[in-house]
Image (cartoon, rainbow, N blue to C red):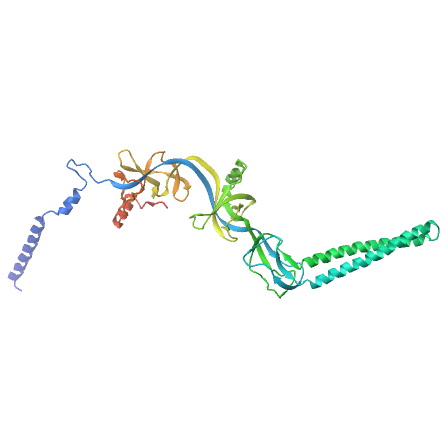
Length: 413
């Protein structure tokens, strides 16, 4: 390529670049950019951003119960494994599996014929010895009259007296043998020792059972116990609360998700007399009426033990509390309808949806419970009417809320 064509190509490139530059310099301004740059500004330069719709709730004062929570295990008040007290062939079972039984109710019948025969023999032996005793007493009575007249020696009289005493002792032994035989015969009828619920039978009729053969297990469900443990640092609090007014501390059993109470009306019955050194906890036993069988042996439940009631605690909805890098805070609405980030200290939970505030707020202060994702310090807000809820945030608004919270604050709960 000649030098002339090289110079021509260079000139053409310079002309093209110059044309593009001139076009960019004279491009009209983007209306959307201008609108964005001037958004929220009035003619006088003041901020005219529309108020953010939020739900606002005042801080209220109320008596707040203080609970200790733990995982508990339900235990039957009494659990009895029914074993026969005599051996023999099992003739019948007189209970229904899984159904309640009453104390003294017949549960099983063991073949009584062998024990009936032993009882009859004992009664017959007793009658025989009673007859011999009567004869001995009669002989002794007659001999005493003859001895007074000198017709019988003293030695013979002593023999008759001893014979009468011997048969008297034999009759007493026969009476004891009769009672023992009667007890053994009664044991062929296996009776329920408690009021309870029958489990699954462990033996079938027709089998030969012994005193080690289990027939069924009975559990007493009314009332019922719930066992749980607490850390040793709570021991003084529980003991002082239990001794405060002499009344038993209230206990509530909740489901595994803490969503709702399973059974109420429970009371603390026993605080164990030692601390488990391997776990640093102590055991407690509570008792529930369990009238509707809400609790079942072996069931795991969450336990709430009421140890105190705070008079005049400051309470707000739990969703008002946000968690930031410097701790918990709320958006507090000020007199000019703007918000500020107010640090708070949460002292405890109140039910499922509220918390008690230890510091940072006072009665009557207004806090935002819905719509925080659009807020930043100084934002103007519009409190919605009761029952109204702010619109669901978009993904962009949530991302912006994270940036405004300085490091990823998130909603509590």
